[in-house]
Length: 126
Image (tube, rainbow, N blue to C red; front, side, top):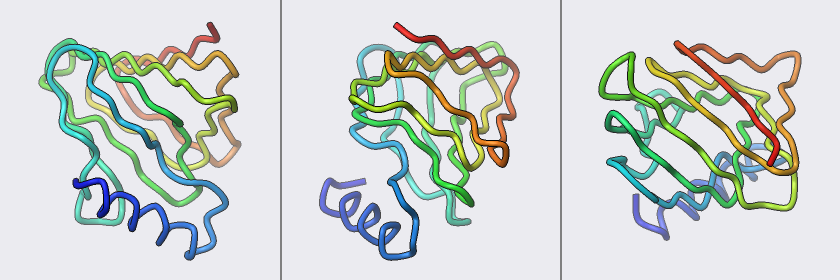
């Protein structure tokens, strides 16, 4: 998704009453992955290879949003490093067919309404 389209999407989410944006600032560090694209049902999906390292400026999922990692297999893993000065907040759905690792030095808050569905999930503060 082009930067101007992504900016318009994040702006539209703000107008819809969502207090914060979806994961933003995608950067591929290692492996294979596409930037987030629409899943056709109002959510976002990142397609990943077997072993992927991503860096994000922010990684929060608003209530009512689905964010998915479509990985090459259920044995695949994606490491997500977050570089912001605030914690990641999972208030919507985080989905994957493989393993997802989320490192945020400011913490990860999983809201009571947040849902994580994948083969493995690990969150770490570093």
